[in-house]
Each structure stands twice: as C-alpha cells, then as structure tokens.
Image 1 (cartoon, rainbow, N blue to C red):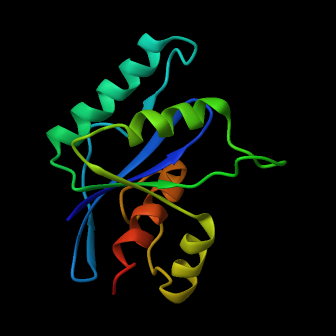
Image 2 (image 1 turned 90 degrees about the horizontal axis):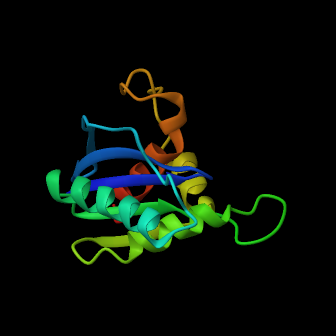
Length: 142
C-alpha cells in the first residue's frame, strides 16, 4: 500500500510518501516535499492546490492519504489556510483520505519507537510530522 502522510501548516502541505506491507515500510522518493497553497483567498487558488494534489496522487498511484489532525480552537489551533487545504484534499474522489489525531501518533511512536532519524530516511527535519503520520497509519492494523 502506498501512503501519503501529510502535515498541514499555514502555507503548505508537507508530504512524506511511504510504501507499507506487512509491518515493513519504505520511504519513497517524491518529486516534491510540499505543496504550497499560494492564494487561499480565491477559489482558483484552492483549486490549483487541489489540482497539484490530484496530479501527485495519480502519478504515484497512492492508495491512502493520511493527514495529521490539527486543533480547531485554542492556543495551538490550526490556521484557516490549513483547514482549506484539508477540505480540498478530502474532496478528492480518486483516493481515500483519513485524519489521524496527534494522540494516536504519539501512542504509536511510544509503542513502536524508531531507531532511525530523518537523515537516515533521507527526509528533511520539517517532514518529520508527515512521516510519523504515515508511519502511525501503516502500523495501525498490526
């Protein structure tokens, strides 16, 4: 199964592409580390973001998109742009999309600690949350 882990911030969707089978995972190369929402104030800007996501999902034949959940309110609430990006991704018909709570990711990492750092996996530090999101989903049913 090919999983696309996503962590949303105020301006972009940070990505990590992973293949998973029987509890084994492989971080795959991807042509981009993130897709930016350039103009969140217009429908064309949001559609442009969605088009880039659809193209990436189709090109890599992704089976599942997993998004790290953000807080809806409070001190650590996600930005309005991040919620627009989430909606645009969730409305893509060609792939199954799921949102995973941060608490589930934390519990998974506690039960299944990694012996690797992001450099070992050829990922950048800013992709860490996207990787952990995909990793948590990959280990969910084991």
